[in-house]
Image (tube, rainbow over all chains, first blue to last red; front, side, top):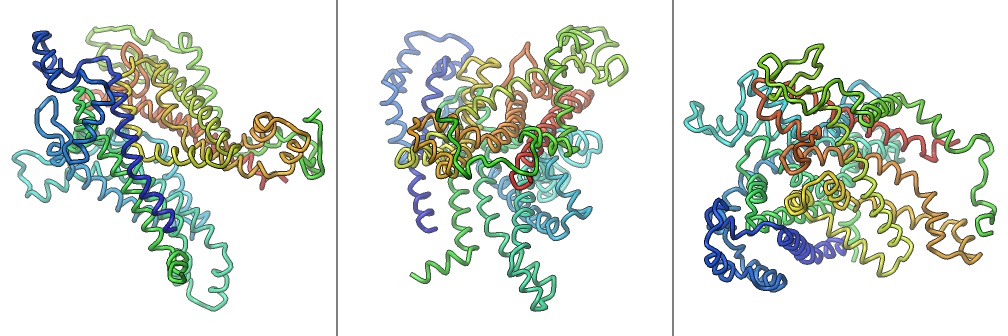
Length: 324
Length: 299
């Protein structure tokens, strides 16, 4: 297991390199000229001589591999360049939006994991009951509804029709509510939608894993020993069923990163994904590179966390490493 | 004839039933009510999509700006209401479903072809080729694909065709893992050894003997992949990076709908419901095929 962890660690660097090469290559294949955007926001043609000078200054006339290596050289030193549309450092701009994205994803992840694991385990214990039926149906349904559509329906219901919650953004300017309440109200809908889309996976896998564990001999042994059903479920079955589930963490993070783009757009959430989406529309290359890089770092960290959690949860791994 | 070689243990005929396997699978499938309902729904939707010019009551792009035709709520004349240009929502939904289905199916085909190609190569070749291909898959799974798809959408001229290809190219990785697993398991089976013994070309073995036996899980994955591709396409179109006007998919209809949540929420209800039902149907059918092909249930 530690070898797997080590191998994953070693994969981090090539992964980041490949991500940056792919996105760099795709962007530079684009027909539009970023300098046009840089000069007068793309509104006027600009003086050809000026444009040529700017191209020269930005190094856009060099061969692509040279341009990529220059970007890479700066990136490893923590300089991701400057936004073409606002001329501010990309790292600062992303930093400003990191909290909005990370808090939304973090809360949703914890919520989805907690609720999903509990619902899935309960559904397995009461297999074929009404509760099991409703939970599994909800899980299939949640897997089939586009997240942005759920978001829109909820906005329509709770913000437009009932007026209980705001339609989007992270805070209301000049709100009557105290700051914490205002923030809370803005988080409810996006957190609900974001956690709902990954809740499904937790429910499904937890239910399957729990059912698998319940068929093992040691559960029968525990029952034969006369341990209370409650204790068997909690300490014998549930704990063991968590081992395979925990690997879902990596997948779930990747899923959240992908899903957050559209959710941030629907709720006008001032996060990194929404920012990246705007950068794509504006062809703001340095920002696009930065957002891509950060997104893949999230996914990689999620995978590493999953591997670590697997080691912590799985007593067999711990035992085998002690034995050595 | 290499294909005529039959060793004991390879393809032993099942005693209990003389019916071909495909018919027994169909029996199991048709006993699954949700899967059958899903299939019926998809057949109806598919027919409506193929024959859209006849199935749609109105021209989907016919603009009618008369005040009593714009933003009409659902009625008998317009079951899905009308949009801000007075276009019939029902007709637009049929044409939208046509595009969404086409994108889903073709993208899934692209993903399955690539995935099977890579997975089969890795599984057959083994050694460093296998390690290299599978490590590459690991790396690609850590790439923020949705973002790359978004970038590609502005780079390549946005057409229905490029969306199909891009979604397909971005989602073959887990199918290749699945295929490799199947190939590894089947490679050591007796009928493959038999084919090896009679001197068959390994690629021919892969194509004629292993792939048909591995096809069950691949077909299931392909069906579920259609559902995912439809969601992906609708998401892209919803944020304005997918299907471009004058074409409309169900997702781009929702994009319009978001700006009309206040006065015409039906523009959001129906295309979304149609996406959900279609995806649900593909999921049910996929699960149904999985159960029907499960060897544990073939007695």
